[in-house]
Image (cartoon, rainbow, N blue to C red; front, top):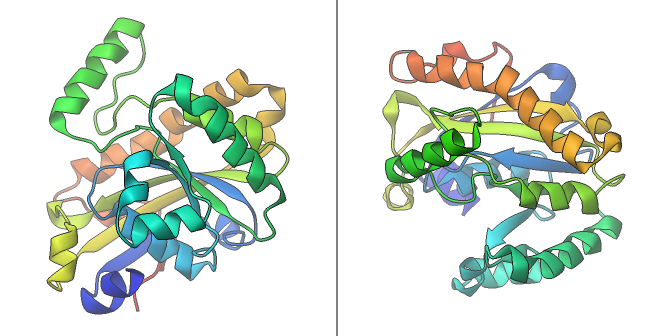
Length: 249
């Protein structure tokens, strides 16, 4: 699948991060939080995992239905991917047990969470902002209101095992709306991934404080960067931090 993105479609994937964080990627266990706006965001995520040598040990909190997909779903099952039904009363015990199994995982791993819980659409965004208004929470223009239960239990189960959280946002230039069919047809896209390392030092103070600390950090630092990206004409990568690493071949 990564081959299709890199070699067949020739899609450019550019990573924007700071040099100090870059040299740690692939050398430490990490929780990765990523927006869920595009059909091929999982392919771009795999692209970066492959570059840093953690593709085989990458994990994700995914909906149960994906485990039934031919080939990919079966592969994920044997790679110890954590599946959930998105019904917390039924998921809690199973998800916690799967996460606890990762504590003695023999290789460095990245654990991906889509905190929004579902792919971004305008209809879902309107409903999400209504919930935010009712609860007195910040209204996010380019994201859905994050769901915190999955993140909270992940922090709890992987405490002292994971070194950092990678606050990540993926976008495509020129208002591109990439599709898997487009990749299969050899269409080239231009992806920009902004990653900011949030140190795990926030976490010893307690689960709830950790969640609030991460959320405040994202609101204060990441969202302004994303706002600039969208405000620039056609999604201009120049609005992102200047240090970058191209992951295209």
